[in-house]
Amino acid sequence: MDEYNFFLRGGVVFDRENQMDNPCSGWLSDVAWDNITELEKLTNFHGIITSFEQYPRDWNIWYTANEPENTALPGEWDNACNELQKMLIIRSLRPDRVSFCATSFITNNLGSRFVEPPVLDTQHVVGDSSTKTPLIFVLSQSSR
Image (cartoon, rainbow, N blue to C red):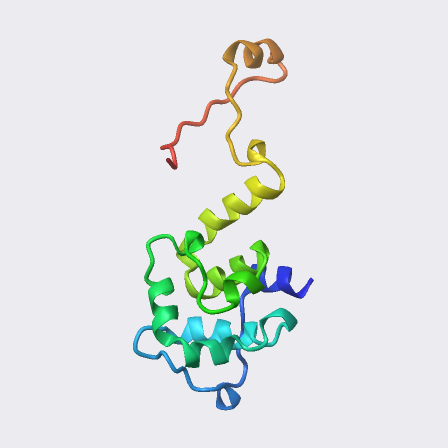
């Protein structure tokens, strides 16, 4: 449950004085480091801070990848993490890629029908309408 909560809320640091210094401050933001230091507190992520100290170049390569969700995590982390745990790392470091990995997670675990928009059958929709249940069409730009 802690991992799900972290995915929803991220890591919140209340006392930075007790926080370890960011060993990758040249490329890793304070917010991202806050997330990593809070992620370290979860059982399955003990040692992730040490990994940033030992493999800063590897983490930087992963961090700057165009599609980090499809790139192996540095060190032992790629084998140590399940799909949800990898999403927590992506959420911590590359929030711009969360929607992509969440879509993959849903497809892999629930099926593609949960991420694909339904096919609009206008004839069926018109048949379901009446004077008491009118049709309202909202036009918007496609997200794709």
